[in-house]
Length: 56
Image 1 (cartoon, rainbow, N blue to C red):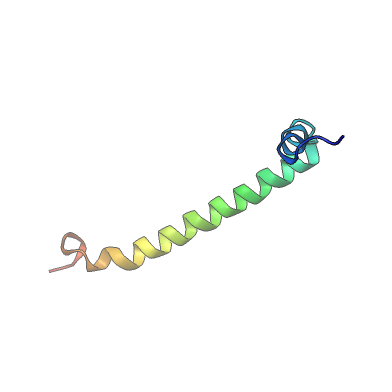
Image 2: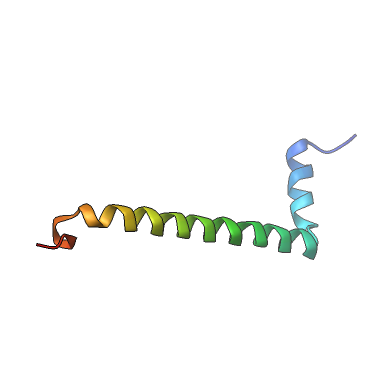
């Protein structure tokens, strides 16, 4: 009898190899960099509208 699907998932998490972990980390790093750059662009676009950043 085969184990339940949840048990298969837990067992597969315990047997991850180094390549899978490095690929996952690389993907998360790229997502983080893209998000940080996107937030900086949004911030740079919105800050001039705030009164304390406007030149008088």
